[in-house]
Image 1: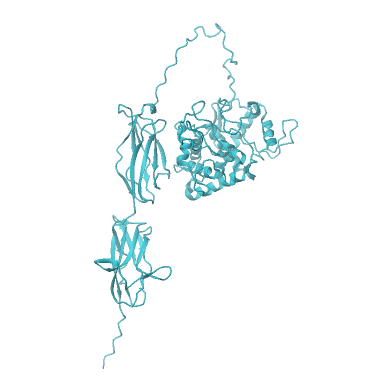
Image 2: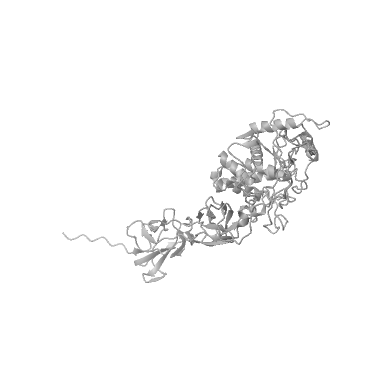
Length: 584
């Protein structure tokens, strides 16, 4: 492993011109939609998502590994380092993905194919992000369950060269009780993991340090908002939501295309280790536990951006030197120094409270959409509305209700009236109450909580689908099964719970101890059926009915959630004898 890593460093020590040519070739051949412009490498139809704050991205805009995929070549590339162990096949090592990591990506793809088939998520996209974020869990250093052997932590997000994100998890995931850090092989920040985390290996926990959990969470994160990864624009947006940088987007697209051309499985712990990092100019900041390789071991593109592994030498036309201009040789009127102006507060900084912006009582029947929407207004201490503020809405409680798109969290920017309206709410099948909580992103103000309730599906009317009389001889079985249709406000009521009971009389709802009966799975007599449910068309067909030796008229009562009831008559009578022929 050490020798292999050393060869990678040696192979990286090539001229800047060769490196620039490689980047240009990769952009042209391996990343669809990527073009080079005077402003740098750009993706057609996309720009950095300036509306995405660090708190809203998966990684908190943490640094990432910048190694480009090798240029595919049918012949081995000779080593440029004297004494190296022969030629190194271009791409052979980089195409290998550690076995457990690869398995996690493919299982996440299969799970998303079931839960969100319209997303069309390829596992190679997860592999591309995993490569850029952690070098495939540091070359596959995971245990048999998929948990990283040592923690993979991003730098402290304390505003020193990175975003400033105060602690949100009490240090439970990242060990830091002051600031957050990106965690695990897919580099989720704790505040994002709190709602995006998934249990990918079925052990009952959501662990960002487990590759199965992290890969499934990343898949759901990318697929939210009904995105379709087969649509280039939506694929771009998904990647930019992970880290809002065009350089990051182009890098991930390059690895995605590279992995689509072919990969192979390698043993855990033997994957190639990345070298270049986007924060190489931020001294002292690094992802634990990997050390930052020396800057001389990597090529630098002349168009690189400082802060992403680029050179900080002056550009043409800047004087060609960092040497200060001697007095008198510059402008005849050198500018006088003045104290820096205090920065104007951002709109977010002026918010002191959140108010309910007209949200009324939120109720819905299971499976239906809520008629009302949650809206919150950001205000200053003087009660003035504050536009252009991010408000995060989170569904809290024991519920399977979601916003449109199937997510439990949504971030919305306030309009000119200072109002942010959450996406439409849809009730799940779990009944009861829950809360929609609104908070201001990037500022601590008291949250706004709105109560919501999901009621059980119900029916207000029942009717038989046939008017055929239900009769039977003693000891026999009824020829026809009882079928009813449930409706609610005139529409078919699907999924409504119902019971069927053979009652004693119209005025006595106790279970009859004689007359018609049903049979259970063991063939035993039962006269009450529970746990019944109408189908998608509101129909309910009861099992066969049988009769004992008691004759007479009996009653079957069907009742549903919502109060709909129907009483059906059942007659048990001996067959009448054929009349005797009359005398001639």
